[in-house]
Length: 152
Image (cartoon, rainbow, N blue to C red; front, top):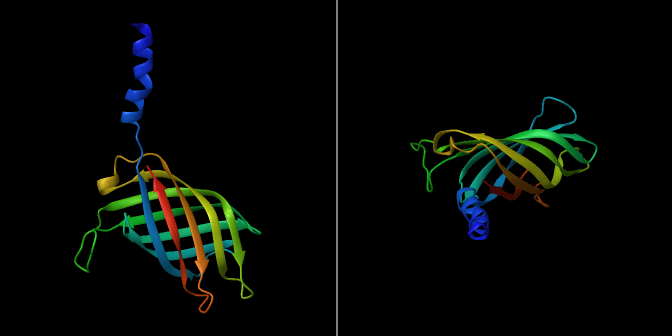
């Protein structure tokens, strides 16, 4: 009987702790950053969690050393009168960046985010992860596109 109970523990924990994956595509631009080693991005998200994202990357050379992400989630097919569903907030801990000749972002790869909190519909979110990948358009380097995959 003990063996049956021990075998059920992982099944029960998996159902309680199950995480979902949310896939978004991103489009936006780099904005002025307050410090020389920082990169600030304003990105619109489409997909599972549509909305607007603000990303601040801190770097040392090509290495991402810190920063933060704030995703304001809007309803699907939101318009100007739509209210936000809530926000997800996280800290950035790693990844790599490449700058173009002008010193602006050419790409950000495998940027690792730890989701720390949420508001509104996401108020119960206290942990999770995300991965961010961004690339500048080859013909207009001020335009960025990429992906944001969240797990919480």
